[in-house]
Image (cartoon, rainbow, N blue to C red; front, side, top):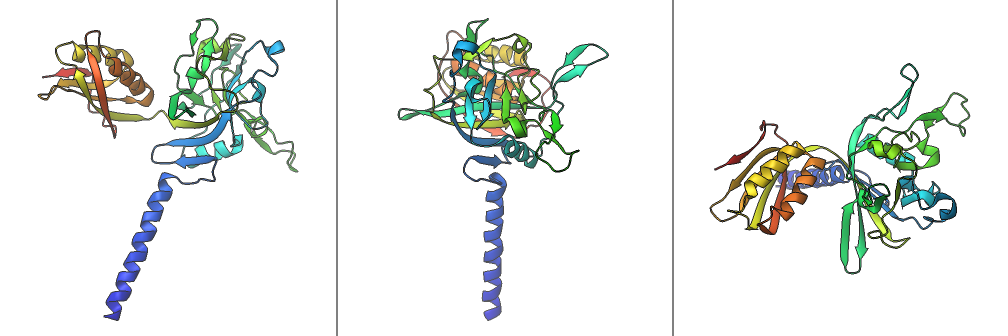
Length: 322
């Protein structure tokens, strides 16, 4: 009997350890200002809308150079300041298994700049707006002066920052990413090699093209939660409820899905709902979901139920099923 009790106790301990390990795999490291969520392939960071933004507007004329910087970085020309350092974010991405890319540089033979290369990421900003919570793609906090619209949604490129001499090291040959010193995290310029992430849009090469989006941005100093997520491939299973049959919803879905490069199908269900299975990267699927929430002209969408599933790669195009 004692042996049985001992065995049961040991099994209980093993189960407990297993549960703890599963929890740790979801948030592998968290010290309050940075969380690593390995399963979802994303980082969650605490920050705030930069209180120094606009400090030098007489000189900068409202132009911003960074979406995100760390404390003691270029806070006066950044939208969001996070508590994590450049090194902490770099190390956290390494823990996620993200490979370091290639920072922007210059091709001497072709006599032209070379764009950054690396894993693509999506960035979201979230804050309290009264009793409600506001969550947007971080690009929406940026205003494009030339187009007079908010900045287009992009997949930010993780290049890992250019490598420079480590001036604080006793080893005169020691090198490190420049972002460790500058705390430049997300650059709005395509060829800003100091930052960990770069904006891939060619428009960013123009001077002073971006300003804060005053129509959306909360007041300076507002606490913000920043999510930086790998633009990974996935499948979404979507059920759309409302006036969505007999109004061209499936054709609307097919047209937009194909334009976005999404594969899968749309199907009318006997209960009046429309079923959509869509596969692509997260940026493509985010764009499709935004369109499905509105629907075609004569539709009236009441709700969307969205279930994230593993990517299968089984679809060759986006079709309509009957």
